[in-house]
Each structure stands twice: as C-alpha cells, then as structure tokens.
Amino acid sequence: MREITLWVLDKLLSITPSLLLRLFYSPKTVASQVKVNLKGEKPISPSLNSSVPHIDIYLEITNLSNLDLVLDRMLIDLWVGQPVLVGAILKRTKIPSRSSGQQVFFRSNLSSKQVQQIEPFMSETPPAGSVTLSINAYLESKVGIIEIEERFERRRI
Image: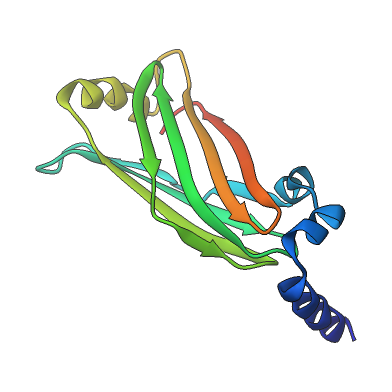
C-alpha cells in the first residue's frame, strides 16, 4: 500500500506546476532532507608519491525528499592545518527522489608546497591542527535552488 501511495505521489509531483509546488515544499524544507557525507573509510585520499601528486575526495549525496534534484555545482575547500585546496565539481548529476548513496568524486593535482603541507597529517601522530573539509552544494529542483553546506573535521588524513 505504501509503494502505491508513493507512486501516486510521484506522478502528482511530476505534473504539478512549480509555483503550486512551492506551497508544499520550500527550498529550506527540501534542503533539510538532503545530506552530503564523506564516503567510505578513507574519503580523502592523497597520492603524494605518484608521478603527478594528487588528492581524491569521495562524497555521497542522500536525497530523502520527494523531489528529483540535479547537482549544479559543488564548491570544495580543504584545510590541512592551513588552506591547501579550493576546487569545484561542475559536472551536473541527477539525484533521484528518495535515493541514497549518489556518489560524487573530486580529484585535484597537488603542487610540491601542497604535498609538504599534507605529508605530516598522514602520520600516526599528526601535528597540532586539524583537517577540515567544507562543502557548499547547489542543487536545482522544481522549487528553486537548494543550498547545502557541510563541514567535516578530522585529526589526520
């Protein structure tokens, strides 16, 4: 019975004009139902000894709302004791309603100065300070632009 109700609700939402839809769903309400999280045990994965040093960041987006969303852009700010990296994911990605685990991947090449800043935070006894990842995600929906801000702090990479 629940599946039938959700199917009917999906069909009604798909034909409802966005102006009418805003009466039931505000962008803030939808934003509270969308989560951006780090994915896996090692979501921030630097490769400092490769021929071109780089860092990979793995994220996942969970959409618990009844609206389909499209990831328009995601801004990433990584601090490893101090600012190390500012980047953006500009690939548009569809995030279906009531879905979890939509994966998003970011890779950035690193300079020698960035490598020097990151290396101490990969040891078992990292220096004072923390690794901070700030995410600003902008998603499109029928009710307008949804803004999500997340911040993750860790002691080491």
